[in-house]
Image (tube, rainbow, N blue to C red; front, side, top):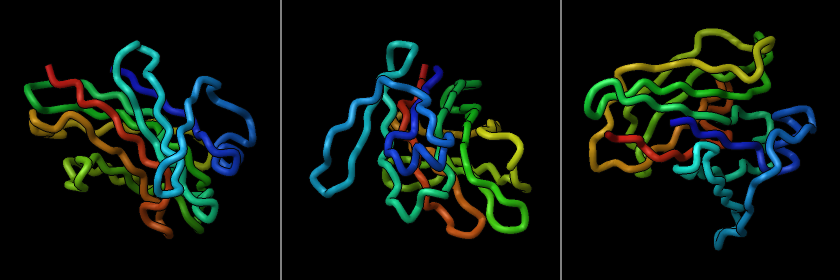
Length: 161
């Protein structure tokens, strides 16, 4: 299953893609708490992905823009995650991403050992991620080496067979 999401707030969009729009088909619905949740149907015609834009002060934080999950054994997945970040060697960079359930329990973490300033966005894989069968959706969030988990996570459907 391939799931994609675009940066949806002008401030985040500017820092993510130099001001160029990645995808035009994004539906924005105001949230009750002042956040603006965004839901977009996947291009493969099935799953939905959900992002909540980061506040303006977090615009330089890593953003998860794509997640692909493949079930390699019952309840065990390889997760390919694409992250866009403002990586500055010696200053800050995306140094990890996590797969979590909606309550925050971490199922897998991929450590990133160096900046990817010349490779944006970049995709890395994590295999052997065990996700219980009763978990229908997970969130993938990227961590900044200085600010921690401050960017836009991506929530995706788990493609259990």
